[in-house]
Length: 397
Ligand code: FDA
Image 1 (cartoon, rainbow, N blue to C red):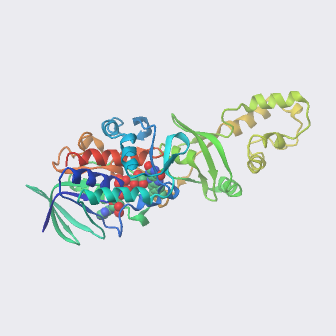
Image 2 (image 1 turned 90 degrees about the vertical axis):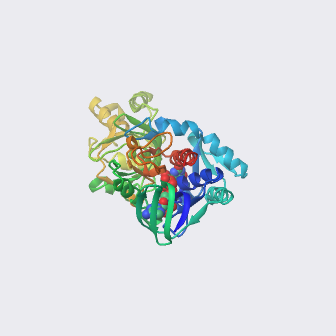
Image 3 (image 1 turned 60 degrees about the horizontal axis):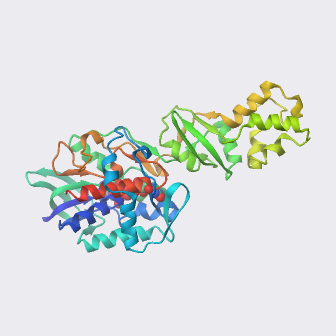
């Protein structure tokens, strides 16, 4: 039986950050991961360039049944703390839109930094290690694993969410929570494309590859980013962002001409006397393929495209404005965990201390990162949550 002060289950973003932080405090730390290598999601993140944090992180960028939970850790470990770390390793990075920070070269640079930190902190990283059972003892925990028995004082669960099972994602963290009597909230695939069916699927297919700036709304939430039509439905940053807030049977509303007033444009076009078609006029503001397809929608009065603008009725104009500014659809579903970036929901944060990440009812047991019911927006927020929660737990375990 091996003994470590701290055992961390899961060598992802949160687990590695926590391990290094605790190791530097002089604690003996082991990271146990069932996958063949650690940090796989870091490697595949940000299109291979890891959007590792964001300049503008605030609690409003996170979703949780308990919205105050994330405040303390986000304050105690900020994006600038992570930047100080990567700058020590001379990481080359750049800001894309909206404060998002990406590696100039590859995601592996971030993983290499975390592994170097773990190495310096004396952390033992054990891959291909399956945890068979966990028992609480009077001194901490005893684990039976495929690498043999392990004892520890502090046990940290950093197993992440359910997205991309082929990358090693499992629901093991939720299982551990349930074993120790901690509640787990409903989980859903999030930061995920919507699938469509019927005529809308046909339309999306015919527009596959077309991308345009939109605003998209669901309930009170609204995002202004790009939408992408795909051969299966709707994707792009705007859609991924709103999927974080979407619940089944809910409608989303899309404005394809954000920041413009089609009613004003139509009035202007009616009065300027030029004979150009509506299609040509609109194609100056929107992708031509989109305009051609959208004007064929059955919801518009037939023959609208060819009718001279001067002959348009108020009802024609209203129908057109509605179809371009307030298109509503109830997506039949999402692509699910196969492609989702994150899991919304998780271990109920009411049962966990926001200062230490220790389960209130189980001394020595900690939960960090995505396994918790804290879900960030697209844009580096989920990694910032992993770094912040991992760091704060690493200071106390
Ligand atoms: P993470 O998933 O990183 O790690 C969990 C670890 O636990 C894994 O190593 C896994 O093998 C291990 N594990 C699971 N079950 C186990 C078991 N039963 N036994 C032992 N080990 C087990 N976020 C962001 O901020 N910017 C970005 O650019 C991206 N990009 C991105 C792209 C894609 C394709 C995905 C899927 C996700 C992102 N994300 C992202 C989200 C981000 O990757 C995610 O939120 C963090 O990796 C979560 O960190 P954790 O450490 O909590 O889990």
